[in-house]
Amino acid sequence: MHFTDWLPTLLAMTGADRPGGMPLDGGNVLPLLRGDSSLEAPKRFWQWNGYSPIGACNAAMRDGPWKLVRPQIGMRAATPAAAALMARYVEQDIAYKRDPDSVTQMTEPEPQRIVDPAPPAELYHIEADPSEADDLAQAQPKRVSRMLADLETWFERVESDRQQVAVENLVDPE
Image (cartoon, rainbow, N blue to C red; front, side, top):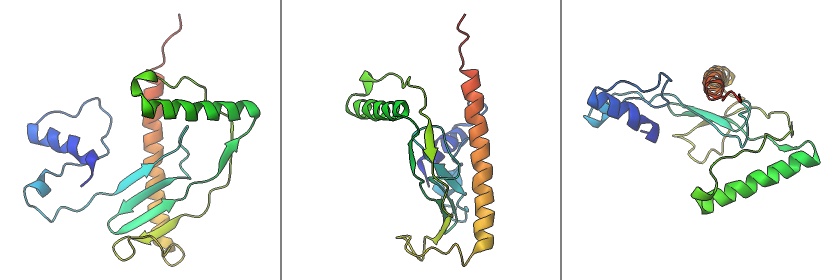
């Protein structure tokens, strides 16, 4: 169970409709809470970047006991101005963590970055290797290929949703 499961579960419990029309990341685990242990764990996806998402890095997915990892890649400022923007972002992030009310929005433009090529995906069997010490990607190329396709499909959907929300939130300056 994951924290993203709470909203779909509460919606199911109350019979309420899903808000906003966007898909939810979690799933209804009400059957599990009622004792049905046969509920299959859903595939889980996640990705993090400090700026606009890059699907080929710092992303992962779980499918049962398997975890596919797209390792973090190196990024650096393309120009001195971009380096200054990146430093300002870190300052705002620290200020937000110390006093959330002091930072109401991150208004800096995104810095130009140089992004290193993505390393190969890694594959782990979490139940047998919880510390992720034994990368099984070369031994399981078909599984890696399937999971990469699932991760890329998820990322494309999420990025499309993110772009749609960004367009909807644009304010006409006039």
